[in-house]
Length: 152
Image (spheres, rainbow, N blue to C red):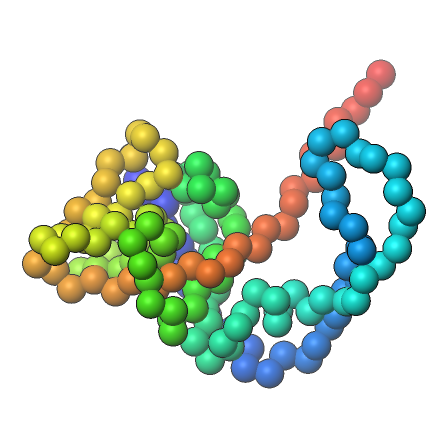
């Protein structure tokens, strides 16, 4: 199976114009909803919320299905902060030996670096004695696809 790869979209804007959106003052219940009054909290600028360090942040588009178990779907935008030092168990974008960037769990050891998918059918990628660049994924953005179901 082909590993999930990510396509670079480029750096985040250094000084985007703020665009705050209203945020509901209460959480959306994922189970059975409880009746409550509608009200709004302060607005939120999604760019500022997802991008802590614009000069070090890049966006990649996820491609493939091996990270679905980690909540990353084909077509998601991965927010990568190159100033964050990846730690064992982090989700990262990794590149090596001219390969296309790959999104996996980062599992380094003293002998090698292991990149693990979030599904059991994709084999681990274990790299030894090779230069590898690893950057932390710090956020995910997803646009919902609307599938309309016809009734009747």
